[in-house]
Image (cartoon, rainbow, N blue to C red):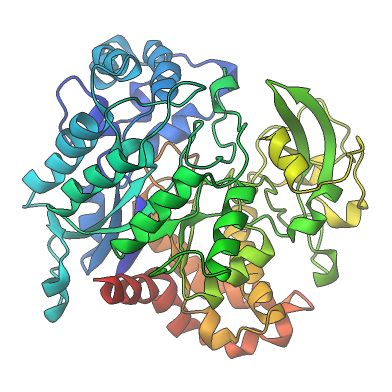
Length: 513
């Protein structure tokens, strides 16, 4: 099987060891007792995309290897997790390293990105084939993992400081100068402007569910002037902007400014490891069940949308995660119309899977927690919220539905199907042909990016099962839905499977090189 992954971290977990060894594995068996608030930690830890696992594909494998430096507050919240490792495994999570990252004595760019991460790839030539323009003149090797590089968060391109607050900011000149140092060694396909913490470039979307979430709640207001300067610098270097982790307002500002011609040399916009909200932004507040002020932002409980007009069979049909880190319908259409590509994440939380709804009334809505910037709420002109859903239960997943289904294999796979179906439906609704639509979507697992995988796809080895299951059952999934069955026969399933799991991504990066 040929395989393409738009966004993954093949060696991330190994880099936290006292003595990094990229051939090693971090096993869930390394864990001892774990607290209730991180009950998914065993699943998170076992998620892997190791080069030895990728070698089992026996055919061309192309992956976007992510260059990422750990931020100050991420290091601070990860460090206490060391005690959850068995004593004999604690060397795999270096306390010395995490403390030096947190106090910035170990530098994000020169230390973690250039030496600890990129350096490991450059030294592992027996396992990794780093793609260049000339790589596409001949068939790609099958005995190595073919990799291109992306950068997750412009904080990864600074040494001066690894966090932002009222007095600390990221300097565009430093970011772009350090980016040029990377480009002297390898090509970069895309860059995320921001990640999980505050940034002086743009506001981020909430995406860190840990015990102490205060450092990670969004408080900014869209794309800032320094962010616009960095975006132009990224475009000048023929690199794509990846909108994952940007707040909705930041993404909206970027797309509006591109439409208004405010940037020169615009490159395609991508979202390399995406989930969908299942709705348009104008309908979003209708799904907010409760809103209160916390940590200086709005704390939201958001119901999981279901498109009742599709006439899905219930119970047993998945809902979406409508947190604003995920793409709204109009953004999906915009990216496709502007020749970008979307990679579907395999993090079950992003795709809408519900783990814990205990203590709720069975008929209540299953909810996702979100924190949303008050400044952006006002700037977007959102109406004064009410602490109740404005849609009927025909349009959201209930607690009972979520609790009755998690052990069912089909229910887990159907979250992936639901995203594919919704992607096509949005394209059809926006005048984009099925033929065009099926060329702009691929897989972006985010494996090893500390995600929580589905039980049916815990590691990259299980992509075989995902492709086979999709090939066998996706058509039936579409034909059971009243809107999808109108256009489902336009999809050649064999061609689409090749496109989705390999060809679309391969063609896109070939065109970029």
